[in-house]
Image (tube, rainbow, N blue to C red; front, side):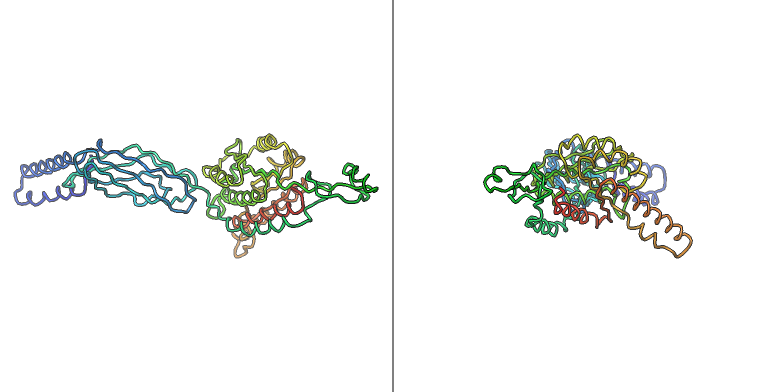
Length: 430
């Protein structure tokens, strides 16, 4: 049961009769009148056990985009249902309005629509629908919470999608270049040509040599449909906020742009999200299924406040790759994390695969490094400069291992990563 503001007003109205006829009898009489009115109003309110609710299916939405959640409320009783309903979505789902008035005649159905604009990625949930049935006097109401679970999956926004047309244009240019046909690499036959000193004798075509009466070798076209494995670090370093979002979200954006580009290039793209254990994986998706599968797998991911176990990560990568592939590590360039975790096991990857490390950097570091206004800023500049020098040292160390390194601010990293992929493709290194 719930009392409304009208009940309070009716109670206060008792001041008048008590003032005209002071005494405990008048006060008690007015209290009894209020209680009787509330009791009658409550009895005449529609019974909530005769109310049926049903939620319409709700799918997924990209972060920042609006959607709706609709509930069908059916009154199976003989009294008119007058009341208020509230869909109990999490605050981060951005539900508006929070409460809605409802009138449902006997035997009829009404549709209640709640507007949603989520402010966080992941699964936004609703467990129940709260219904309040008011009496005809509006003094009291029956109240009940009806179980009505729902889940709205909020997908990564994919801001870097705007760069995709220009990257695809560059990819089409690469497709037409004959410079991609590199002698002695690949398995797809390209053409025959005369032997020159330095050619691999295993590439000699003996039949063609016999026909032409001179030594002829085969040339091969590098494979265009290579394997690309994107490894998304979900450890504590990915929880750091860069601007308005975690580093993990910026890394996801870069991964989506690279995956879309590589899929259009005909490469097979897989995803592994891992810290100390595998959090999500996407394997074997076709080109048309790849992006939906990736955003669905990334949506519920959250950074776990643990150190990345690179031994486990490298083991998971090696277990999934039997041939040479491009392994893209979306992680941090933090000196401590890289030196203690990644470097000791990095050779296990670089010995068999081409490794590309991409990292989101904080633009605040460059701003701090230039501060000289007062002593506080000078100390901050010294700390920022030291961090930048440590990053440069780590980059140099990674390159000595043969690792390609790309870094940039959240809005710059996705196109830079895509550009480096195209450069590797153009050089025939994939």
